[in-house]
Length: 183
Image (cartoon, rainbow, N blue to C red; front, side, top):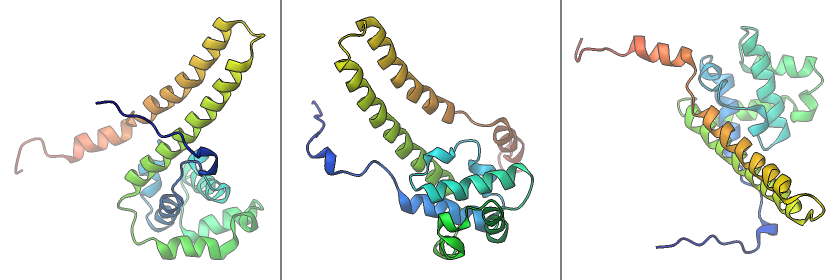
């Protein structure tokens, strides 16, 4: 059985993204002090489709890396101090993110979803660049082929890097799970 991809009317389509997942991640970060530790090593700021969301996440990353809380007040202050609060939509935007979020329990799956959408956008971008390389008939074909291969390899290697588990998570899982049933 063969599967054909539908390539019709792709100019009218939005790039892959999940605004709801991005919002839930950001709300979860501000609600749950442990949320950043669960996703910081796998979710890139560039994975956020909305620039304001990227700014909020970068604020949380900076606070987290300094050992500071990533709650609503700290993120609001950081964004304000760095001249970004208005750009992200102000205090109301941050409050709305927290109000819409019930829990951060699914933040790992949401981070994976946002990363997958990002990688699909990267693949689309690489595909567009590869098409342009194909039209560059003045370039040596082997160089064009190498450049095209490198673009796809970069995306694939990023995927493989995201599949790795940070050692702190592996150690925590090793020492918190009982080895012998029932004890």
